[in-house]
Amino acid sequence: MMNIGEMPLGELLQQSFKCHCGRVHETNLESVIIASGALTETAGIIKDNGWNNVFVIADTNTWEAAGKDLVDHLQSYGLNTTQQVFDDAHLVPDEHAIGRVLMRLHPEVDIIVGVGAGTINDMARFVSFRLKLPYIIVATAPSMDGYASSVAPLITNNLKTTYECHTPAAVIADLDIIAKAPQAMIAAGFGDILGKYTCLLDWKLSAIINDEYYCETVVSMMRAALEKTVSLKHGLASRDKEAVGKLMEALILAGVAMSYVGNSRPASGSEHHLAHFWEMHMLFEGRPPALHGAKVGIATGLVLEMYECLQEANIGQEFLLSAKPGVQPDWEEEIRRVFRQGSGEVLALEQQGGKNDLNAHKLRMEKVIARWDQIQEVLQQAPSAGQVRKLLEEVGGPTQPEQVELSPETVLDSIKYAKEIRARYTVLQLLWDLGLLQTYAKRIVGLE
Ligand SMILES: [Zn+2]
Ligand SMILES: [Zn+2]
View (cartoon, rainbow, N blue to C red):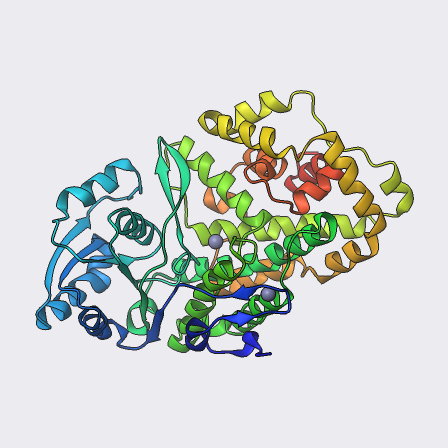
């Protein structure tokens, strides 16, 4: 059995693994180049695949950072290029933006190259998938872990909607470019990685309580990447190229881990649900949604406070046997209030999944009672919120919701209702099961 936690990323992409968990793990991602000067390898990849007509998607910032040089490089190799460069102060990846890409795109195009980070990658991924074209992403910042994933979250009807698409043919991360990204974006990527502390614990909780599929190997692979990234905090604070490269590697690895298990468990838990909740809220208010990884970092601190409260409560069998779920008579009304135009989807999800159903609660509580020792072991593995916030601070990221202009009321709503966004068991649902979610939410936000 190979130890995939210690294998270089390049080797992971070439092989499939028969795992202890009973599954074969593999990824569709074929090529990742993280190196100084990687940009100049793009033409070679394109020519080797027999593609000739390149369509570049960028915005004015990423065009300056990498797009212009990329197009010069591609043209010097005899490739034809056309492009869409967005000049919006804040680009929203919605119907209008996708339409603008399509109106520029000629039918002879045979490869799309996105130059940017989250937003540009999502649009390049979506458009290329729908047109049955391959795409390459030239990364401009190590700011989030979506490079290697296969889904594209876009704004549809003013709501965030996730579309199933494909992985890029290649991810190109030129260290000379990404190490020059704004420090806030490097810190955001670091925040997205710190979120793995809580998402991996949430996954384990669900394995214990719902017997959900769980892969020890993938978890240790992600944990190794997390620890490695944390050890490089000083390098990240000073934009050391090697450290930034390792951060990028960890972010791409998160995407690989997701394709290994076929869902986002290894990279996304309650901290991401909170971040999604806040993003929706910011969209409703018509303001820029703040960097994804920055929100994840802040949310990780809050989730760890929830873990701490639960640990400090020193819960015993007597409490568990009489625990009542956090049922609210005005739940539906509250969902309509906080999710606004998105509430229909949230209500439908609950109708389907029934996670707040009393019978489902009873079945889960049987497991919680029987396996409380194992749950406590998970709680003990959580780092402190203070520890994670200190790490974020050291790399220059925000640590508190008010730094991204979230009010205590919104944060309170998010802790109470973020679990309704996905049919996925996390510590937030466990707290609801124990009847502690509302109390802890108020305590943490300071609105007791
Ligand atoms: Zn496995
Ligand atoms: Zn993320």
